[in-house]
Image (cartoon, rainbow, N blue to C red; front, side, top):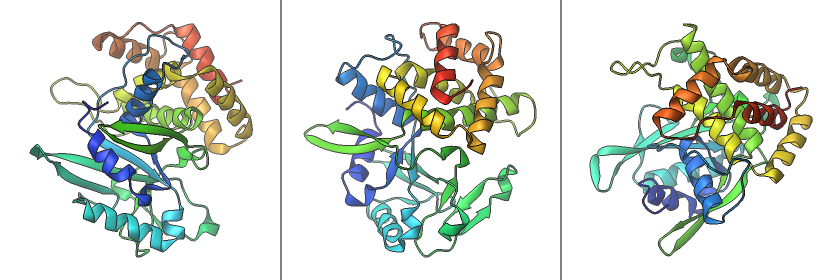
Length: 298
C-alpha cells in the first residue's frame, strides 16, 4: 500500500516502542487489513471484496495502560511532539502538515475503552456533543486524553497483528478483531440512523446532502465481506462470551434496526453507497445471516 499517503505517517509511529498498546481502527485500519488479506491471498467470505474507503485520519484506540502507567502516556505525548504533531483542538486530537502538501493535515484521533471505577482514571462529560460522550485521562499529567468508546468493550486483548510494508521497512500494527470492529462500526452506523430520524445533530454536506456518518453504514458490510471462516468462528465464540453484556445487547438491537430486513434503512443506504462506488450489489440474505452469527443475534 505504498501509494496510500497515510502509510509513511503510520509507519513512523508503528516502528516506535511507544506504539505498544495501540489499536488502529477506522477506515484506514480497514484499508491496512484489506491490503494484508489481498497480499497474502487470504480467502474471505465474500471473494469480490468492496474496497475500503480512503481516509485522512488515523483513528487509534489506546489501552488504559497509557493512564494507569503515567510514564507510558508521557512517552506517547513526547513521541507525538517529536514527530511534529500539535494539538488540534483537544489533547485527544493531533495533527501535522503533510510533507508534500503543507496546507493539508494528517490527523490523529485518540480513543479508549470506558474505564471502570476501580481503574481510577479521570473522565469527564464532553457536553458539546450532547450525547453523554466522555473524555478519558483528564488532568492526569500525561498530556494526552481520549474519547471514551463504550462500544469498544471487546477491544482489549483481542487485537490482531498486521504487518505494514513500506519500501524496505516493515512494522506491525494491531487492528481490532472483527467481532470488536463490528460492534464499533454498528454503533457508528446507528448514529447515522439517529441522524436520519432527527434525533441527533445533522452532519449533512451542504452541497450533496450526504451525512458524514453514511460511510459507517457501508463499513459494516465491508467488515462482513472481509471475514474469514476462522474469524467468523472466533467472533461466534466472542459473541457468546459477551452474550449478557449490556453494551453488546444494545448493539445487537441497533444492528437489527439498521439491517434487519431487506428494506431496512441501513441496507437501502448501503446498496446506494455501493452503486456509487462501483461495488458489487449486496447479497442481503448472506450479509444479514453472517452478521447475526458474528455478533450473536439469536
